[in-house]
Image (cartoon, rainbow, N blue to C red; front, side, top):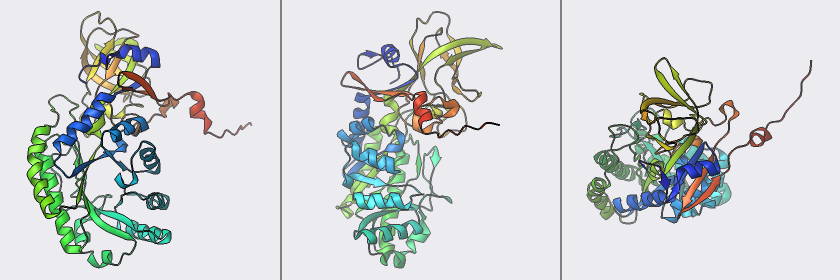
Length: 423
């Protein structure tokens, strides 16, 4: 989605006019294509588990599940969303470092495939909950490995972490694990980092995780019914970045996964993917309200901003860099300039792009922040200044579908309980 003049033959400008702005638009063909292309790049028996945190819209999830993805969830609402969207319990895993008793009870009673356990105390709670329910619950032990991941923009292993149990503790935990009767450790989970664009790094990380899984099984005696190798597949957002080479990924993973599968032919191999499946399929449309020049800098002040798209401030990067931005409605009259694209919030941080080259911009024009299908509204402070969240549209087989209503003032005020005070 490097340009965004139209989605499956529908002009982006028409979508903006019909549904209003700000607006998220998702291309269903790109969503389905991302699942297919990743599945073709992964050697068997690797399975794709979609990380709902990237984009939990139930219609987006339903489309991804319909094309073969399974579900990785981290909250009760995500669990309910996955089930509503068509994911089967045997193809759902639940992870997160702070699960409470209600989360675990829902997993046990809902018969999800596995709870990814992140601490010894959580393992005890799973054991007690499953025993009380008279059920056995499959557990994947999330391990904080002694090694770090290669190629990650945001590392999540190899240091003190709130995620998982340290590798050394697990390797020494045979007695503790063998005492369990209802929480059944049947595999491991390792997530080393995110936004990885180098296929060789993903191959290296996968090989290290599979080797660690075998060490854990040998040291503790647990079976390896499943190994979750994490994932962290990235997409290119910024200048000088290149999208992941799926051919290189397939070439590198095939011998690594093949060797492991020959030794463990009945082990499920799980790969989590969120951003890779959804980011390129989405765009955030905003309408220019005003244009102004301030001390030789040109600003396009729009009706949307970082309260809807905090990811555009910078993903996994300390330096501010721009997501790709395109003008999709307007006559383009006037000279091309470098524009700061800003929003309606009362903070200088509400800047979607800085110094981005665009043709002449006028009030009423529509701009698109591209590659915005992941970590949009749900990773943003949508209630700042009480603006609320935007509408979302999914274009499926040439037909636009409204998949989320725009927040109204009544929506935002409904849950408040007002008490009138007078002096």
